[in-house]
Image (cartoon, rainbow, N blue to C red; front, side):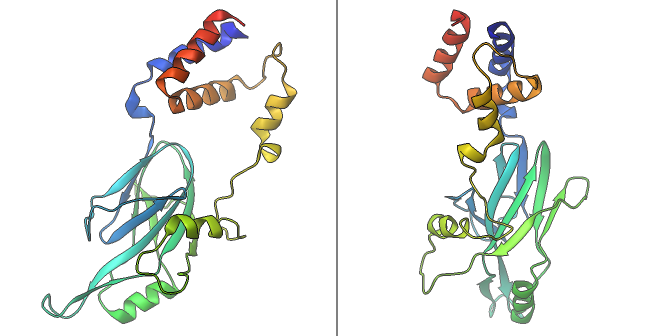
Length: 218
């Protein structure tokens, strides 16, 4: 088994750092990102249009809202925000753009809140599937605590909730329980993926321990 694992881990070690995040999500004009996978995310500024985030392949949950300038002229315009929305999607090796339709009046913003026509597109112009829900504001808040709100939201049955699987319900965990140290897994592609994933997540000390363990043959 170690003879199989060693070249796989060595290949993971030599993978350039830039491939660790293989999903690039760009935000359209006026779109603000507030949380990624349960953690708060800071924005660069209003109407930046070029902000975004790099993610690993897999399932991701984000919280966004839409900031627009409403008014007939720049002198009498005001900045308004839409409701906050939770978007859940799964992808790999893609460049995606999240955008919203043009809004110029309070009525159009209200209509967007009622019927949020978000678009998640790849660079080829193809729509990418996602689940959507409103992240309801809890009472009066000067500053929203998105991490706390998402913790509650993810315990609901919303289609946009990100449910963390427990070991007892995780197929990978069940497979690990059924494979003894002397067995070889049938799905070697999965083995390679898991080794690469955990190696890239490890700190330098853990990486050194992993390499020593494989070389030792224990």
